Image (tube, each protein chain N blue to C red):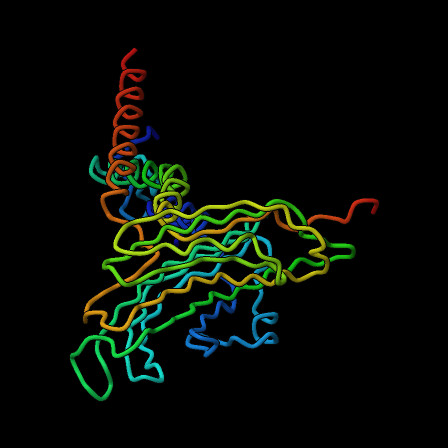
Length: 67
Length: 241
């Protein structure tokens, strides 16, 4: 019996993202891009927040020499 | 399911970029009276930052000195421990009037010593915290008759007393110093900024270690938008070719 895509009932509609509307695809792409750029933005945000602060920094912990 | 949501990648990235905030204890005292959280050594040690954690928050309160002069103190702090130690302190102190006389100038010279208290801890044996420590203290004094000093200590060792500077004006005080003998699993930091207001200080006079100004974030935002635009154009050009 030849395949007829019109025979497919609604319960067997493909669920893959390939069926997303253009708007949905655009939204998905935008969220992915924003997420990616959030990584780039984080250090700059911290720098901006700290640029006029009273700050103090130190080297952090390390093992005592000879151990 | 969340993992199928188009928002999922963004949520994961957002979670990864947010600093991990544990149940940490950052405390603030004014003239040795605790105003924020638990200033006791035991409380600070229990809530010490561990590597990979941070503590930030806002505060707003008033203090009434013995002479009745009242000051509002507000701001925020931002302490992180990604590997090295970092303490950020943003206090704004404003004279608001006198308890008994009301809306009058300060009746006498007032000294407000603000201390931001933060412990850091690292497990293991033979831990030391020796090395070069930096301090940078921007000071804004809105009027004459006020002055400020700054000093950061680690386990009681000073990175350097900075100032005094006198108002009005904006100042940036910096220093670096190599500290040694900082042994043990816990490092105790104390960020002190002391403001002095002479008698006769007008209501509304303020002194601060300035908080970030919005205008500073604009160039950063513009840069990020330009970066995003360039990247988008590049990907479109690549798709066509």
